[in-house]
Length: 197
Image (cartoon, rainbow, N blue to C red):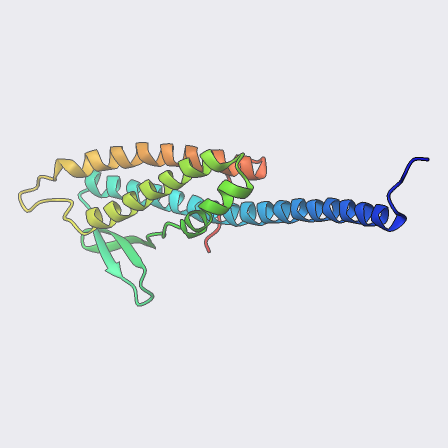
C-alpha cells in the first residue's frame, strides 16, 4: 500500500500555489498600471516642452529680425515671476511674449521608477533627460542674450549673437529629435501636440 499525503496537506499546497499565482498576477497588473501612469505623465511633460521648443524658435526669429532691421530686444520681469521678451522697432514695441519654461520634474523624479518598471524606454528616457537639460541651458542663454544690446552705439552688432542663434537653432532640432523619439515610444504617435500648462 502506498502512502499519500493527507487531504489537508494537499489542499494547503493547492491553496498556496493558487495564492502565489494570484499574487504574481496582481503584481504584474500593478506594474502595468504604474508603467501606463508614468508614460502618461511623461507624455504631458513632453507636450509642455513641445510648446517651449516652439516658443524658443519664435524668440530666435525675433532676435534675427531685430538684428536685420536694427530693432532691439527688451527683457521684462512679470509680477508672476515669468520673463517677457519684447521686440522693439524705433523704440516702439512691435511684439511681446513670455519665454516658456522648461519642464523636467516628472522625468527626473521618475528615472528610478522607469528603470525598474519600464526598462524598454529607459535609454530613450535618459536621452530625453539630457535633451531637457540642454533645453534649459538654451532657455538660460536666451535670457542672457535678451538682456544684452543687439546693436552697439557705433552701429555695429556683436558677432556672438548671430553665432548663438545658429547654435540654438541646431540644438533645438537635436533636442526635438530626442524628445520625439520618447514621445513616439510612449504614444505610438508623432510629436505634434503641445500643452501650454
